[in-house]
Length: 166
Image (cartoon, rainbow, N blue to C red; front, side, top):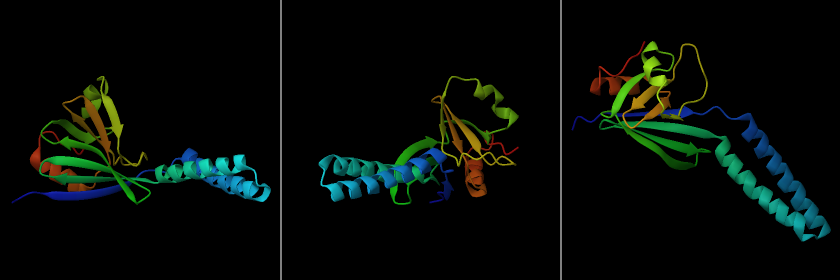
């Protein structure tokens, strides 16, 4: 068939606020449940259950990974929550792409001033040399990715004049 298949997994940098919120809600749930069971009051039990549910959602959103899949001229991005749940984040066609270049490239200067929606699917860490890339699509969307070499080469074989690695 000749279809190229490339897969890349990038872990998002954990937010300090989400980590703090996760631990705070777990502690609050334990204290309220123990206090409610010890005294027999219903209000601390309800607050403990609510804090436990909040801790569950905070735990799910504290550990985020992005999985990039390139198949048949299309980049599909999934959001993996706590290494157990998967959500579809977006699908972008390489044929609709205007440019794909490193985030600090001078080639993106004219695209950065556009009024477009920016979506960040990278680790959030600015490294030297810059490993994050920006893909600008025709629909007015700027997508920030952190691809590996195989993904860059796969996109470059389909659209060589739109991909820059400088």
